[in-house]
Length: 250
Figure 1 (cartoon, rainbow, N blue to C red):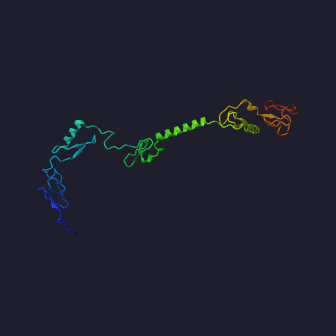
Figure 2: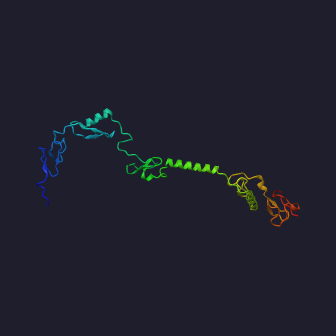
Figure 3: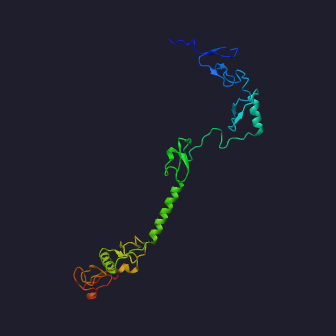
């Protein structure tokens, strides 16, 4: 069992004299005091006049108001109110900023917040990524990139195949019931009114891109000089040269 009778010291305040095993030493008068009398004012320290630096925190402006020795703190605070107490900026004292993302109420603390490297917006950790807080800089960059790609696509020349290849494509399209766009050479469906690639209107001559054989009524391409089915020459035997006027059997 520990013996503490030879440890500690008695408080130097005559009315107290309490023995304290962890006494306080006054740095001004060098006296020894207990927990109740270690402050300057508690033991009436004669060498600590004007050293009381305690302050009263104003609940309105959140500033410290120095207490005056031997004066009622209520009077000190009342004088501070009358002489120029201004409310603290940013709302009530001690209030913390909230995350600016709509619907988020997370407080922005020193360890729970981050500033976006692109737009500079300070958000909570949950909304730190650009897509989570609708980063204005990221959105603007994406819009500029899309506009640049659109301009480049509009200025890029349309590659046109050689005339021989275009003629071959037209003949193949005519056999399949398609018409060849004169602007971009795309083969479009027979019922299409405009080109599916460049939007060019269907030319009138595309409606007569085939001719009917007067012998066997087979629909041939406009590029064919003879019928692909029976070998009869185009227009031979008094047949029709286009489908719009019908066909005539010999």
